[in-house]
Amino acid sequence: MIGDRKVLFSGMQATGNLTLGNYLGALQNWVNLSEEYECFYSVVDMHSITVRQDPAELRRRARALLTLYIAAGLDPEKCCIYYQSHVSGHAELAWILNCFTYMGELSRMTQFKDKSSKHADNINAGLFTYPVLMAADILLYQADVVPVGIDQMQHLELTRDIAQRFNAIYGDVFTVPEPYIGKVGAKIMSLQDPMKKMSKSDENPNASIYLMDDPDTIMRKFKRAVTDSEGSVAYDEEKQPGICNLIDIYCACTGNSRDETVAEFSGKGYGEFKTKVGESVVEKLRPLQEKVAELEKNKDFIDSVIKNNAEKAQYVSNKTLRKVQKKVGFPERIR
Ligand code: TYM
Image (cartoon, rainbow, N blue to C red; front, side):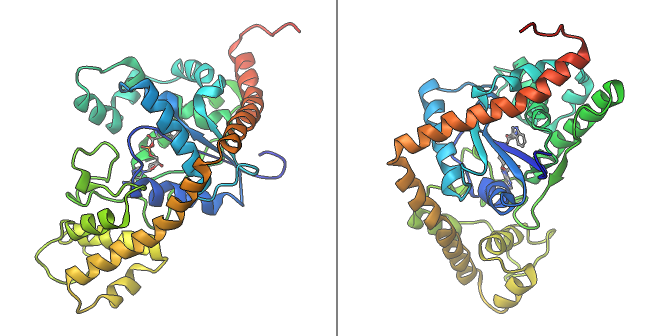
């Protein structure tokens, strides 16, 4: 708790171009929850270097992501929006938590298995302990709730296990966080292979809608989206995973329910349905893209957000860090 408000933490990697999955699965919920909680939204640039990055490009993407948070509707006066690398406590707590996390637990993480098979020439220790840094992010702020897409659930469960393990030894040090998974959009799938999640790192550009895609590109990608030969818009995950994904995207963009969507397109062809889904996405992203363009012109404002919020995050996180350091037996600082 901060004051009388519960705490929310979440973050995104500044790697690759953000997709519609990131927006509908996470960012949109962040905005909806931001009034209710004391929020910390981090651009997790330290996580990004677990795979090789071009330094200038990483810096550019990190800033673009921070700008996007604000463009999506997060108010930097109310939410703490900051770069993970500007707050030293993340790395410091991660080290301590590493000593409370087992190799076996980390070996079971599906994201580690996926990423190490994709980057077989660079299976570094950071990639392996990535979920511990994520646990540190969350526990540092004593977060009650963590809004994420389904793909991050396993990491969140590990975070809870680490917190409970630590608390069992040292008393109630960490708040054990709850995941928040949105009702729709928690797992947006690839437009080219509806059995795979839509991902920033997909090599096929037609598989993902990027948040900065222009309307023509968005419409073209939806026209090419893989469907099936059933020929009717119905929500059947086994037989029609591609259509289910399009229904979910449409619901997340329009606010309509699955039943309403199925009823709206009953008796209509896939061509018409895909066009409508594409249009709903174009309309959803238009204000976001306009706001990004406007904010990008305002360098001083973005710089002030970066500076002020890092200070706030540093202050809040230090409280937890000092407590943890004391618990594990590090000597007191002499002032
Ligand atoms: P990242 O950067 O891969 O994704 C950011 C958020 O977007 C969600 N997401 C999706 N949701 C629905 N459908 C999809 N296809 C889709 N793809 C991505 C993710 O679930 C996530 O919520 N490890 C995290 C970043 C992180 C973090 C944290 C998150 C670091 N520390 C602490 C929460 C709390 C990651 O790589 O997310």
